Amino acid sequence: MGAKESLASLGAHLRQLLTADPRAEDELRAGRAEFLEEVERRNAAANLRRASVIRRRRWWPVLLSASITVGAAAVWLWMRPLTFQIGGARQAQLGDVIEASKGGVLPLSFSDGSTLVLHHGGRIRVLSLEAGAARVLVEDGVVDATIAHPRGRKTRWDFELGPYRVTVNGTKFRMAFHASELGLRVSTEEGRVTVAGGCLEAATMVSEGQSLEPACRREVPRPDDTADDEEEVLAPAADARPAASPMRVERWRELLAAGRLLEGLRAAERANFEQVCRVATAKELLALADAGRFFGPSRRAVTALGALRKRFSGSPDAVTAAFMLGRIAFDEGHAYAQAAHWFERYLLEEPRGPLMGDAFGRLMEARLRSGDSPGARTSAEQYLHRFPEGPYASEARGILSR
Image 1: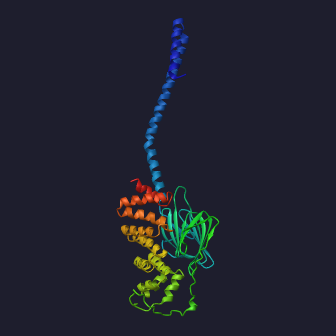
Image 2: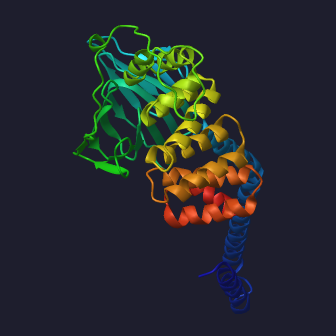
Image 3: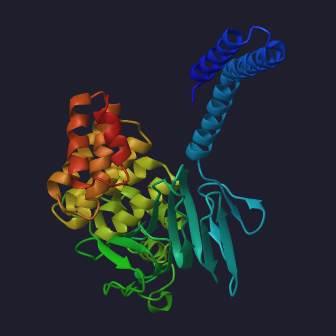
């Protein structure tokens, strides 16, 4: 029975008593007391509800402010770039050479929970770190990688090993790269990774329990097969100018083949860098370009890649050079229109190449930053059509939502 019905029933009962017996004072007093008690109880309940509403209204701004603070903190943690340590405590810097001692192992710990472990003599450099993304150069040796994937966040880790690139889609795998032979072996324990470049005709997925070892190792003459520091003057190419100085050919070639990119770059500079680019193989030009990108100046990389595009036009390596020129223009020169040109060239020359997804994503970003909003929208639509769950999907949706 509701409140109104209850009170009405009580009032009717009182009237009935008064009509039947005007002297029924005792029962009347009892009924009146019951009536007043009921009214007081219901008024108290109503007051309690009003006080509760007032308290909720009073705390609402505080709760809203707290939720905003917590949300902002969560976004900050989400977007915070990765950091890493070498061993147990030593803070590391981007670009530093990190090398494990002979016969030992050296762990690297990243702030997202990922780890890399270098084995006896392994040598790497961490080139860049962003929120959920990293780029690592493996110069030589064996590296065990365990990549964390925080819930709800897309991660993108890229490993560069000579002419090869390993993109992480899984969590736990091993890479063994022998720079002297350009030999690579990738074994996946959990998840999957994608290997591209080198002598692979297309990007290859390596799933859990599988291994990949491209059969394209290159034999490099041992130092004792040639005279140490022998100076040779090579005949210039048809379009080349006479060399400014004799070149120590074997030295820079041996250093590049051994994965010692910085030393190989310096040796090539001493031997006349432009002339080296006229006689180097396509793979050596890619190595010189990597050395120029990682250790500077970047114009060395541009020179090597330009020579590769000219001398080996139409080759897979020349197509890769277009992509690398786009990356240099985007990352280092902030020349976004020029970067868009090179990414577009790559996609025109190799529409199904191993770097197609990255080229589409970078082309979209380059067009947006250069002020080409219609072109950026077109690229975003194309990207989502081909890669609806790709690493640039959120950026593409953001562009289309504007």
